[in-house]
Amino acid sequence: MYKRIKDLREDKDWTQEQVAKKLNMSQRGYSHIETGNNDVSSETLIKLSKLYKVSTDYILGVSDLSEPYITSKQEDK
Image 1 (tube, rainbow, N blue to C red):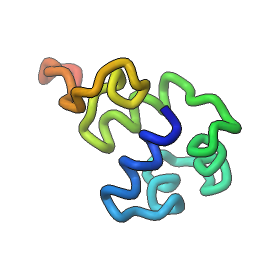
Image 2: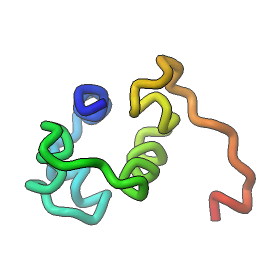
Image 3: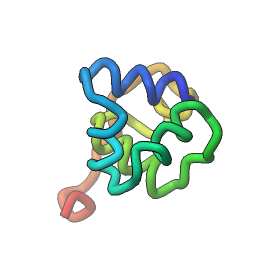
């Protein structure tokens, strides 16, 4: 899972600091997620999923299909 999170960031050519700001956390805290030193909270997992427009299953390594699930418009608000 941690490699996948790092790969998603690198695919966007974003720095850890840029992603950390988008997640409202410190760069150091985000770095610890990528290295596996910190667990990923469900809230952060969902934010990452929305940020990269991939499913949480993809981030977790449960699926190799990256497409996010279709959500209702109400959930997106």
